[in-house]
Length: 438
Image (cartoon, rainbow, N blue to C red; front, side, top):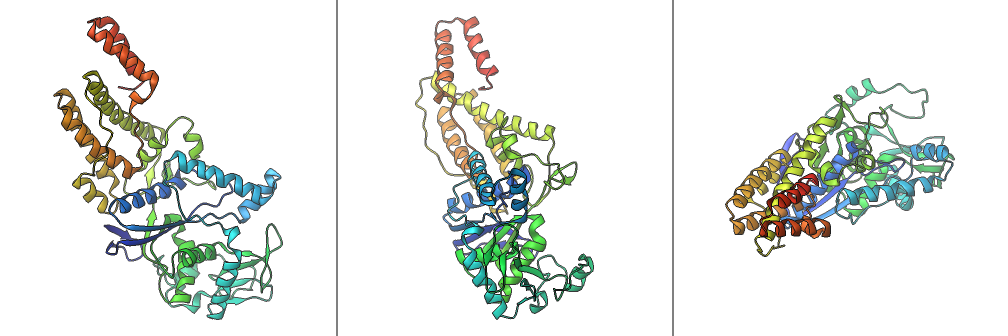
């Protein structure tokens, strides 16, 4: 499989059948918006596809449950930080389920790994890559390594020109970032340096080291994490192991509203849970496949509804085939086949979602022709292929005949057809249309 590496700006071929993936997870102070869902869905498809190709995949997706934003939210809600974090953590799991995200085996929380983070920071101090201030904060010294800026494709001088001048002088360089923050505000722990809590960039660096090793095959997340978060993760790993924290960096483009990135700070976001009140997880996933994952995706009500209607028509075409099988008393096979080779080739090309959708659209046209020609064997064979492709894209299809109400309506339609009561049969057919079954 070929994956685009945003560090080297080159396409990278996966050779080893063992792949480790780290994808930055949410800070659980609020519900996620659809921009947050895009990397989640992208990596879910990647994992489904790699496993279908018999890759051995380790997947780590962290939960940041200690953060200033959680402290602020706890004050607003008049609850403890852990109550807030646990509440939104479980909401996040509910959204994952609704989006048909595969269960994530390794989902470590920051609050459960503080001793490991203190040990990790001490290693950086011992390696002379970090220093303790008189106040008890610990900072990473960006000048201690020769590669800082490699991921953001800038050198130290360029980065320093753009950094905000700070009032405090306890840092050697404005670019040095906090590994341990001295504070008694909110949850805190004792450390050799002070009472406080770890910095965000150290959390993810530790998780890669603890659950994967001194580097991951693939590290990813939203493009907004590239700098400074991913740059700072990479710096710590390089200081300890003299290598980048990942072989490949996958950065997922923004979901935009009015050509501006969707963000809670901008107030232009749409929560996934709110969209799920009127739409399915299928609808949200199908919308995400309109563009290559690196490219910004513009969200409008019109484009989203168009995408939903596109998927609805695909399902309706399949439904018609199943109903015709039922009406002709042909046994319905439930087996799932294998992906078409062109579909595999397309996803092998750095998850080319638009072309994957185009392949399925072409297959659906063939299904329609098989239904019209009553070539039901060919229909079922091709459908088993489409089901396999749906599985990779995380699309859930349910045969409408499994719904007692719909099956009863089809039975009445069949009965009216046998009795040649075409007025009544048209009535039942129209009811199926009104229910958007066919």
